[in-house]
Length: 583
Image (cartoon, rainbow, N blue to C red; front, side, top):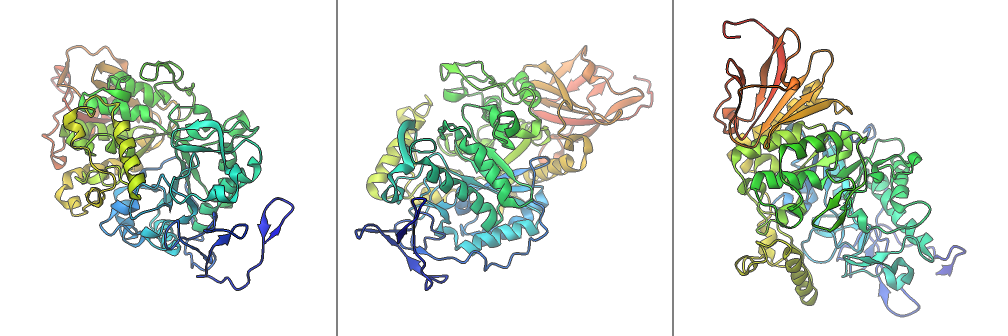
């Protein structure tokens, strides 16, 4: 290979047609897979394979893409979403997801990683879809089918570190990594040091690659607080720009996880931000978990799960926007009072948080049915961007553990590191719970996480609850609006929240969410409870509908004033008022 002016080496190999397997021999010594391989059929340690990205017959020429407004995100792990754990099997379920009301599938990382199973956050072949789910065209077929069903697809990518096994980047150039920063998961990526230009370009090309060659509708950036860059242009800002360019006019979504809650990421680049469309809001999850379970240890300790917290989040985004955060003994977050609600991705379950429950249990096993139905209503009718975790919509019983398949010594270190991470929870640090900790490398642990779609029918009340709420959010123009300033609210009791959604004219909506006991307002000095002139409040939807397993909902506004059922959520709309004797 000949050295080029820009520092790269190149040679033309005309015999390398699609399907050809190859390696790079460095300085006449060892041979390694291509760092930018499009496919690793035998895993990250094997040879690379030439793929023709233009051969796939796409059907989505008129697909407009997706923007953040109006979306319902669905986090999916391909290996456990179906029993088969393949792109083809997952593709067969897309039409049902769309029928349920999901609009965007968010794929957990698929960059090539070692072993037969894993979460994907230890990827090493950043351009190669992992072969355990199928071939590259199987991923293309999945995306094409999603677009055919009206679903967008965004991909979780890891640009803060590279996995420990199968990472050969340093063999090609030591400058890919830096010791300038401390990284939680290994070596930090060199985005701002000496010779960082080609490193930045490698990751920028990768971001564009998924959009251009796989028609992915955007990215979810993992743990951006660990993406260190002191360059004039932050690498995340450059990634967003490159994604937009690669889409060629299609709408795209780029969201980020950012533990430190830096809201500047979601401000426009022209205003000094990074231009992201959305930010994961862990505050919502943590407050919801405390409200649902009553447990507030470790990183839940700064949350009370009270109505005030939810009202503040729905109006202003993060709870922590620069205040002191006792768990970390420092300030957390930056101001985001004026960011639009759609920028905040909210959830009550995701891959990390289910796994961190100790037994990998879903939230329905940690709370009461009524509370969970009420919280689900708050999640799916709030003006933010809601996200469901796979199977949540039908009350899947499958746990979601942390799992990874590594060679014995690395598996031992992973098991030890996972156990240490869970020690922050006092309950999980007990001898009794340590004895029940699942082994991440056990194939049975992985197998237990696979969904059983027959539960859609067995758990029909839960499935109908989600479908009806998503239909209400989609078809009711007031709930669908997501407009800034379109909501106000009040705390009626520590566990009871009133939300008023402002529509056009007098067409407002009320949502009452009571996670506590029955509440009787003998007097109701709260103007947001007052109906529009000439109207009375009429029940539009209730979590206590018997179809969902509830016990029915009598009128809330009675001659004895307001009676709000416990462990319930009720949506109301105005209807013309006819005076009755008891009014």
